[in-house]
Image (cartoon, rainbow, N blue to C red; front, side):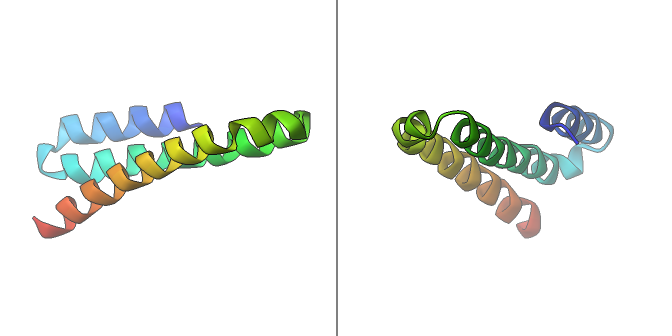
Length: 79
């Protein structure tokens, strides 16, 4: 399933039921983490030297997305 489809589905869910907005944002952002993981695999397969150069930026992006997803998941669980 593509991240774009997941994000679109979560946006529609949040629009239908605003009470679930935080959970939908958490799920949509978590799909971005999966996209970063996929990028690492594709770049590594295509060019290991490039993967080495992009390791820090891709890792940082994944960590930020994971932190945001975790924050919204915590918020959704608290409500």
